[in-house]
Image (cartoon, rainbow, N blue to C red; front, side):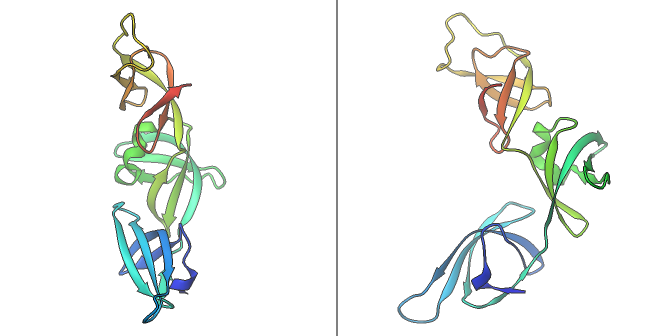
Length: 185
């Protein structure tokens, strides 16, 4: 147990049986009345963001979230199999937990997986990954880097928009948070 005075960004709280991550917090001391803490919380599983206000000094339950660096091995049915590089355990992570990260996962790639007890919560990838374009329409003469975009299929099967000058077989850098093209690799 901790008090609202101990809150920090990134801390995970257990409120009403649900896990929430503190995105922002602000201690407010109005001229009249008691102090309070205004927070912005993100639901760990759904990603929903809410604003919540606590009275200063209120006790809140801190959840223990264990983040482990793991290597992605392969897909087995609906599950993704990862390997803990320190203990060599191979947990099966459901596709629902992996979510959008599946679009940018390649075998042997490293990822951070958050666990609450033995339950996997989410998979975090590096901010950018390098992937090969497996299929895209050829560009036309006169295409420029500042021109339009065209769809391209990556080696993981994900579709992104790339500039007209990108060709099949090129490696591109992709933002894993937004799915945007960042540049050639």
